[in-house]
Amino acid sequence: MSNEKLDGSLSEDARKEIFLALVEAQDQSLGVEESRQQVAQRFSVSSNQVRLIEREGLDEQWPPLN
Image 1 (cartoon, rainbow, N blue to C red):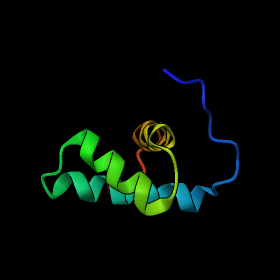
Image 2: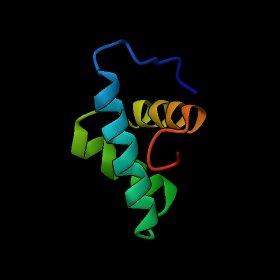
Image 3: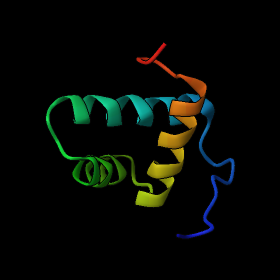
Image 4: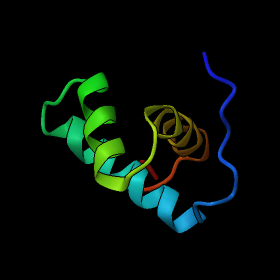
């Protein structure tokens, strides 16, 4: 696994928007990998950044989880 970290270039609001898009994509019956790739492309971030945002969102219980 890459050691890539979120470097602060994305605000928390932007990360929350990406997380919400990821959750919505998965709710639309997209597979986990496919949804990560789609969201990464949509927001011009790497798949690994999407994974890190996904973990952060789950850990922090970001909307729509809360």
